[in-house]
Length: 368
Length: 99
Image (cartoon, rainbow over all chains, first blue to last red; front, top):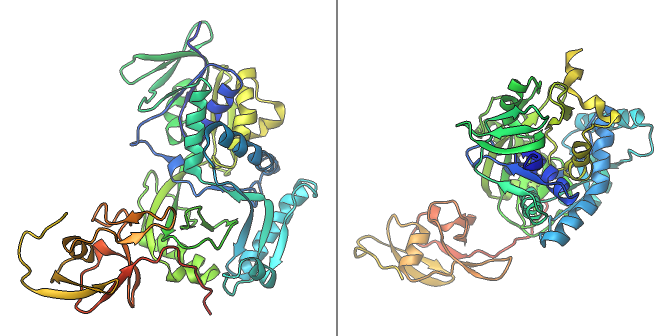
């Protein structure tokens, strides 16, 4: 008999949500995590629980994000009650346009998704400058924003900590500094996880490969295709000021401790997390157009992090056909989708079946 | 707690919360205050605790002060200037809309 029902490779936001969800459902599971020299996508997150604009080219991703956002409140409450860690989750978010063209594009994109989804469920408001200014007096002379209750923000580092803490309280084994080098199928249908020296780390009935940028290396010997690349994003952090903005916007949010986080950016530079002045200046300039007062704040730090990006930007959920019981999951929405990963995807794994409606997330879509 | 290894050779005088501090030319504000026996640079807005320099290399932001004419600055990254006026950081400033 295998040591575990499920072994999870990757202790970031995906692996931790699966580990928590599985432990919560009573499965025996182990989560293997690399050390701090790994690409730590989950440590560089902006912290948005976000629906707006996602899934323009795949309605299933829009409804999936919406479902996650509807579950987020219960998810945050349950984690807080179990751990005492307040995730600082605040519902409601703006996509603020820096100019007319941006606003038109945002509205057109949202209307497109709304039409694909049949209307009512995907609601959003368009706020003109005057209304937006009455809600956030610090906005500059910009045309307006879209707003929806489905968006929000949280502290992503506390989310990760709460998941790690509570999955262990619920019986999962968390093994940091323990890189998995390969997954080896056994004759009885279970799997061995091996380290670099070929030592057996664990045996498990099922395996989830959710190791972010490390997933391809584990998948290839098993014949599992995972077309992902690194999409670099940079974030600026200002000094702390009094709370003036409760709700997040997609590019500016004020954290619980008073700092403003400014983003986003998107660059294809391989596995390079270094910031550069040109990108940071572009982020700052756009954010100052939206909120001129930001220009008077001191910056405290900046960082770069690497999104796990698929060719169409939508998640990948797949089970190997050659090796049933090996699942490979990847996406860039680790915070937003954490609620569905914990509450729903974890049970796909215990059931051994990805429900048919989620077949659209298989990477075979890239091979047509 | 701290004392200077050498006597002050080129004195520079500045004010901290109204008190005159004499320092060596080239000192950072943080070094000058510590050498003068000041460890309480600011009061933390989150829990009202007394804060002062922790890292002295620009990372921790514990040494924040308010320099007249310049605003919020890290004391470990600013040199003393004759006659400058420095105050404890005022905590969470309310940002104002700009015209």
